Length: 375
Length: 131
Image 1 (cartoon, chains in turn brown, red):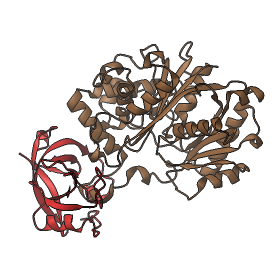
Image 2: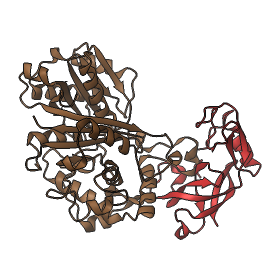
Image 3: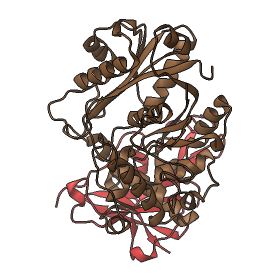
Image 4: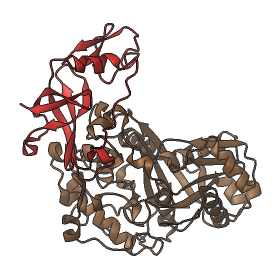
C-alpha cells in the first residue's frame, strides 16, 4: 500500500493556554481547518478516529465528537496508546481505507491539561506511591539515568536536543515557547527529577490538531491541492511498569521503526528530516538510536555539535516539538512532517522529500512511526 | 506530618505486606516454569500458569537505576525532597520500586544493596541500604 493513502489536509488550533475552550470545540476547529486545507466537505467524511483527552476521559468520546461535527461515520472511535495514539490512528485509518471500510477519515486530538487538570501526568504509580514514585517525568528520568550511566550519555548531549528544539520553535510563529535556550541556560536549569532538568521536559499545553486521510486516488478525484503520500508506518509496545522492562536503554521504537522502514522500502539514510517525540530530551535521543540512525550508545554523539539542527546530519523537530511548539502529545509532529515535504515549514529543510515522524506514549510504553513522501 | 499514600492491601497483595510485617520480603514463584517476579499477580506472566506461590527473598539485590525528586507531587513528600526512588533487582530475579537509604553519593548502577524494612504509619516498607 506504499503511497496508496495520503494525508490530504492538516489543521490545528492555537497552542498554549486556552481557557474556556472545551475539547469538543477544539476538535471541531482542528477538523474544520484540516478539511479546508484538503479542500473537501465534511459530508465526504465517513471515518472518525479520536484520541481521548487526558484531562477528562469520557466513555465513547468519539461519538461526542461525531455529534459536534454533525457526521455519522461508518468506522472510528477512541484509541488509547497515550502519545503514540495519533500516528497509530492514522495507520488504522489507512488500513481501513485500503480495505474499503471508509473513504475519507478525520484523525483528531484535543486536550486541555494546561487550563484543565494535568493529573494524568502527576499521579502516583499504584502501591509504589508509598516510595514517592509519582508522575511521568520520573519514569523518563529512570530511563535517562540508566542510559547515562551505562552508555555514557551526558547532560550536555541531552541539552543539545533541547537547544535545537527551542531554536526551531523560536522561528515558528505558532509555537507556544519562542525563547531560544543557551547552553548556559540549560546548564543552570533547575532539576525536576534528577537527572532531568526543567528544560528537558515538554510544555503542558491546551490545543487541538487534526488530519484528513484518504486514498491517493480519491485525493485526485477531489482535486486535493497538496496530498502527502504515506510511505510507511509501524507500531511497537512494551510492559506497563518501568521496573519490569527487560532493559531500560532500548524502546519499542526498534520494532516500530523497522516495520515502518520495511513497509516504505527505505533505511534511515533515505530520511531528510525527522520529527521525533520529545516529551523529554532522552526520548528522541534513544529513538535516533533505536531507528538505526546510529548504534546504541552513540545517540549522544549524533545529536551534539549541531547534528540535529538545520544543516546537521538529521534536522530534528523543526517546528519546536513538544519542548517548544506545544506539549500536545504528537499530532503537531505529524503536521510539521507534512509541512516539510510540502515545503511550507517555518524552518524548511531544502528539498526535503522524505519525512519521518515518531509518536510515543506513557513512559515509552507505546511507540508509532510514520514515513511521509512528497507527491 | 501529612499521611503517606499507603498501599491498598487486597487478597492478592496481603501475603506480600504480611511478609514485610513479619520481617521478610517475598516475591512470587511459578511452580510450572520457575519464573520469579513482583508485584503479585494471579498468573505467571511467562507461562500463564495459575500455580504460583509466595517465597521469601534473600533481601539482596542490585540497583538497576534511580532518580532524585526535587519536587513533591504529593504533600507527604514535601519535607523529604530531595529524595530518591530506585529500581532494584533482587538476586532471585524479581524487580521492585524502592528507596535507597544512606549516602546519596554512593548510588550507582549495579551497586549491591541489602533490604532494610522500615515501619511508617503502621506499614512495613521495603527499602534498601548500600552494601
